Length: 376
Image 1: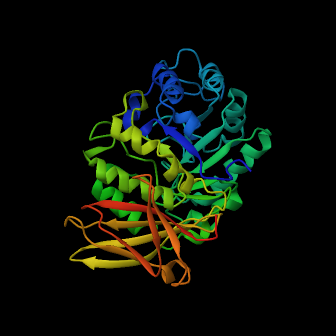
Image 2 (image 1 turned 60 degrees about the vertical axis):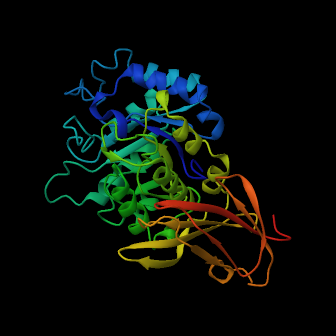
């Protein structure tokens, strides 16, 4: 399996958009090592759209002038850091940025990527010809990737249009987008994460993951998808939910210049351990109470050692709302004593029975690990 646990890495789109270049990619790979991201488990450095020249050469994709050393040399540089290299194309005639894409060139492009040493392909949906059904195009590229003989993680990005969770695994995909693009705003995190992921947990597992899009943690209102930004409290809730969802953790901020709060969030090894738990269960919503138009939901994720990761979220504008999780809601006997650990404070909160209650701040979270005594 190429993705026994959710893939972790970085993608250029959220911060750089069309302004990506060879030097940024090299400096990002350097930062993975220097900032501790590699040690924490992040491994893929992925170039999104706008790396391509405007025309093919001898029928093949080639990089534009912003990548003077070529893609093969850049992949070698990333590999030299002990990391993996990813690239982008599209199932249509052109990429979303108007560059040549892979429709009708699937086998040629897959072999080109393999020859370059690519380890990850993000495959978008723009400019699919009129009357052409999109899912077979993803099957076609999946087959072409397998035919190269090189292990390339396949990320289907068709925005959830044709319910890819129902067919993408059979197309060879290891992860697939469940929604349109995220942006750096609390409203976007709320809609994509807390609303659009409900009910999808049964489709995820080792080597096949639902993908609610890249992280916006640490963007702070800057970059290509900036829409006002989020607070650090909101970024913490965003990261907590993505960990509970067993989502791919693809960083979108500029890791060369992370703020200290962003670094603390992205390197929280206890939260990452929830995401990377080998059982491979995606979290699901087990309760929700409405306060006006916004809820205080509870999400839970069973873990391999018998414990349960739980997120108590206060999505209201009211400070310190009480949010509770009952043992029965997470399949634990109410009489069973359980140790409760706060994964952000990194401290034990005692032994409890029946339920546990926290008071997260507005737009905040209490991320817990609830371990029945005698388990773990």
